[in-house]
Length: 363
Image (cartoon, rainbow, N blue to C red; front, top):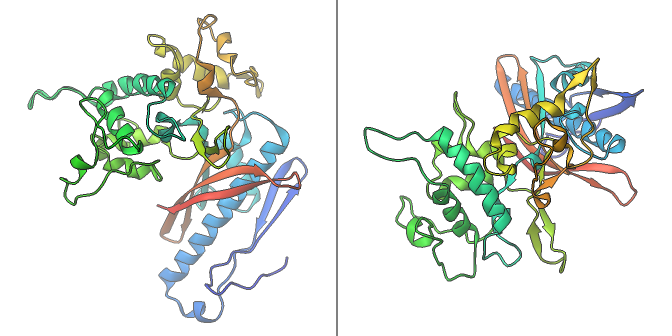
């Protein structure tokens, strides 16, 4: 193995990756600090080692995603990147056990695109199809999250009480007109402590939604009993507009092969949300170690018992993805570290595939 010098910031990582037979065997050599790094405290060295393990884990995850794209066209829960046991096997071949390094890869296209709620590039009006999707989703989500408070006589929120403020947070060029009775523009937010202004543009980071009216930490984050609103949303997925590549839009298609049950329920027509668990189970049915059903056709759900006549809006669904969320957790001695990384899988001019990091956040 070649040993690369650390860069001027002393945090470069040496990674040598090789693919052996049909499985990926990855050998990593952690880049050791020299010179001044030798005098660092034990805690500082532990942190550096943890960062290097995280970087190694993310590199392995990206390699798995690249290999997947070279072998298959669709993305689903049936693939190696979505299988915890196979991920653990790859880590074992790289010399890590489950207590030392953990990787989870999820499809960002399995989530609802926040900015798709508004039609871009104009950025002023609701996308009507997305609006209905959000109404169905929040109707179910708020029923689970909010219960009538008998002590204060407060009733659960209506879906519009979240949808309208999100729309006002995103939209622009409307002279700060408030959407419905529950919307909120800057006049509402400047009365907060501390005061702030409405974005009037696309949401850039998911946590930004915590600044939007009626989206509280209790609703946004998961707890021991319920998933949080943030678990089902993404802000990634900007694409060039069809008519003018210099403009942008947000497609908002959801990968029906990877979406979780609450999102599948929102895709279904009102009154049929009870079929979502059946769809999720259908995707993973197997026999003798082989999956039984092909998920290439976006109408595969009609094979699910009781769904032969069901229609899901084709403008909402996809079976491929190019955006993934990698969550990596490392342990060393008594310390631990975790990171969440968003990557886009894209093709180089050479025809080979790569993963480009869009966001890297330590947790």
